[in-house]
Image 1: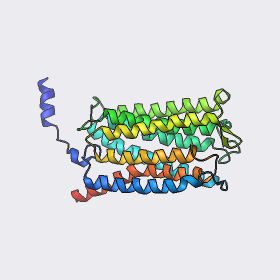
Image 2 (image 1 turned 135 degrees about the vertical axis):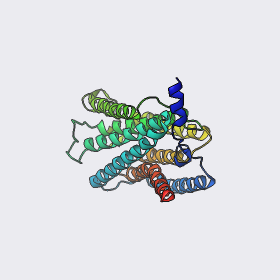
Image 3 (image 1 turned 90 degrees about the horizontal axis):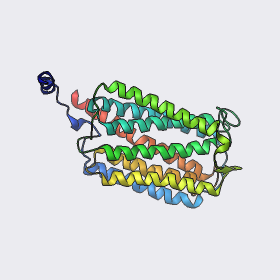
Image 4 (image 1 turned 45 degrees about the vertical axis):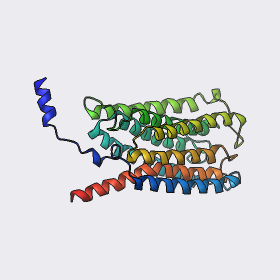
Length: 293
């Protein structure tokens, strides 16, 4: 015990002000976030009346969107995991896992999307595969944000013991295994799933499913708001969840079919949601390096 105590006393002190997950949000952070949410809300309101206007199918857009989304989420997850390896907080590990999951979901969704790599999609996809993957993808990520919100505390929340590399390997394998199970359900067990999409248009069952998915994102946003004090990453996660709500609303609620205006506009919001935290992480990394030069 004496040896352990001496090791803890001699351990280098971590400057938590250099990490977005523990750095307190400033008025400038809140102002920037409010401006972005305000502008996004105005654009959303302008798009809603025209969301059901049919547009030409553009599989190339879907492929580019899914690829950019997956790359962005993977980079975000890696940057968050690098912070976790120092801070060792469960909240940060949980959030990193959420971004890994969205990257995996985006890749599987692209592989099964009809017309991208095969007329009906790869992996034995059926007519309901991609729409159910979309619901899983957009329903699971808010659960990770909810978990992050409840695990975090002023100093980052509870920490793990042992090697952080082991925890990272476990969550990475867990994400792959979980996504494999979901992919198996929506492909091999496709015929057992309720019909959400019929002849390219949404069914009444879709309303209940997407409303539940949307409510999960709203719950995540509210939880983040009330779990104070807010760090920089908390503020931008709230911006992410606002964009996520707009994405779901345009892509699956106020629109009526694939490849209408809402379908495309919603995915642009999804790309923005994927980019906000990444952009802030990259900017802060540059600032940190500038201080050390």
